[in-house]
Image 1 (cartoon, rainbow, N blue to C red):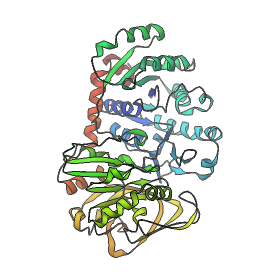
Image 2 (image 1 turned 90 degrees about the vertical axis):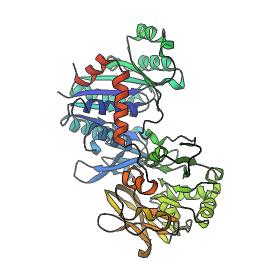
Image 3 (image 1 turned 60 degrees about the vertical axis):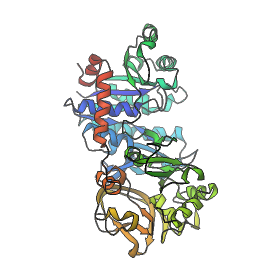
Image 4 (image 1 turned 90 degrees about the horizontal axis):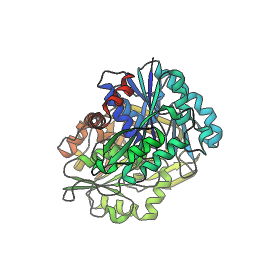
Length: 490
């Protein structure tokens, strides 16, 4: 019978995704057939994977990485509902990998009832294929104002109970403070039928002497019956991209690095997790830039993807970053645009139907690449290797580099074939260069060892090594008998 291990958090950012990934790898290397599941994720970090009907669809990056950690092929069943934020008050609903405009227009409370059955079906299909499902919750399971519609935490737990033995761990970020109160409050507010699922709580991101936690764990166990399952140390350089697109605004890498890379961080940035490997490249200092001062003196400027390209382009002009990018390119220094960033680098953008946001006939881009982009409602989803064919100048080291990549976009770009330098597996141009400026539609290039080695002449730790590091941490710091019971069911 399939077993279920639920990872709840006392808040967003507590470490649910991190812990779920570690548990997936820990189970996999014990020979357990394991798969991840999150009923609904909210993130603009997405990957392209197979759907139940055999097509391609989108899931949150966290479940993609968890599947890789588990050693199984990622699938939309692992994240049946993905919400991609569009500003402060709206989200695009991606159901079983496909964007659904009608559902996206519904109020949150109304659409939850329509989304839950699809999420439940995904969990049931996974349970039929694997011995253990690691379920990641969302936010906190104790949000009592949301409880009637909460199929992500409460509903998923009840579905799991109906399918097989289930247990839950509750993780809290002790580095923020208040963890004992957070654990107690979450336990107290859980529904009576789900509270018995809790097998223990985990204190995450701890630094210092663990003996100083006493007598907190003993007092909390006396109040709740919950044991302390483990204390995980704070580890900054574990190599796993942060969930929810959270980025560290502090520069990453050595201050004396020979190469300073500034990645622009506009309000509607998407798929920023793909640049995380840059922070681990020896000799590179990664800076997330929200103001002109952050790009001054940069060797490279990177324009990342965007959930609303026109809105983020307007922001670049308003903040003065557009002019800074243009000055950088005019000085002959490298500029890289990825997906939405590529579109911004072109001469013009056209969206008369409002597929990317507000409708507009035409607007000017940064005019650094000879491109024109027209938005359309149908998304292009692709996951396949790409090849650099004729890069030159600062990008010449990429000649003949083949790298796995993925595309998620609505825009169709018209360009002069003479500027094409990157092609998909069918030979279609998906990247163009003019002088020091390179724009590509391919996401995920920085996760390719071949791409990193060509550009920087070095190797960086792989994702697989990151998964091993995370599994080592839980194996070392979680109570051994409890961990065995949760993973093996005995």
